[in-house]
Every structure is written in structure tokens, then in C-alpha cells.
Length: 138
Image (tube, rainbow, N blue to C red):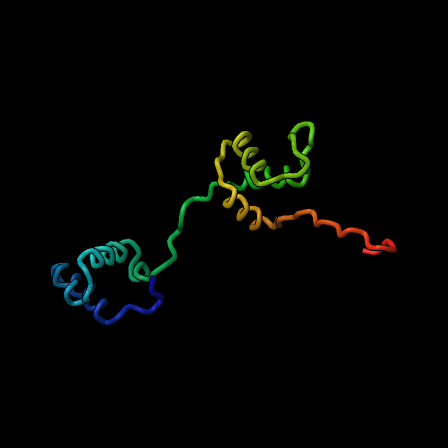
């Protein structure tokens, strides 16, 4: 995607179309393919000149909805109950499994990791303790 303003040739190509020229002629004037000219015309017709400005594509719909995030945050804050959940700390795979069982949302571990990071959670792990030195110091 280009953030530069529309070049003069491109503007002339669009102007020639609206003056009655064929799209193939406009493509030759603009120095682009016929498909690009077609895309410009559709964008211009739908959104006026503002439609010709390049924008970031919207991307796919997120798998986790806001209600899923709220439920997941509640589960994480409460922590696991070993007798019920079978674990003493949450792992990504456990949370993925819970999301599937409770919400029927299938999500990959890396995706869930990014979601949790965006929600403000960080990966925590127990730090190994150094062996005690002589004299009881660490």
C-alpha cells in the first residue's frame, strides 16, 4: 500500500473515464493495468475521491468476542481449582481447552498468547531458587 498522493497520470486516467474514454485507454494513460483502473472506478463510485486513498485492510474477524475475554479474565483471576480443573496453574493449552468446552471457540496457543498479552497478562514462571551457600546465604 502506498501512502503517496495520487500521481497526475492516475488522476488523468480517472478523468478520461468520466469524460467518456474507454477503460483500456485510461489504463494506457495512467500506466496501469485494466484491473487497477476498474478497482479505482469502483472505489471512486462508492466513496468519492476519498475512496482512492489507500487504507489498511480490515483483516479477519477476531475469534474472541468481548464476552469471551471477560469470561477468560474471570477464570484466570480466580485461578484453577486442582480438584475441578486438574491443574495447579493455567497453561495456554488448558485455557484453549476451556474456551472450547465452555464457549465452543477453537483458538491456537500462539493466538491465545497474543490475546492474553493484549489483555494485559504476562507469562509468569517460577524462578528456580539458587542452592544455599555455606553460611545460609543465597
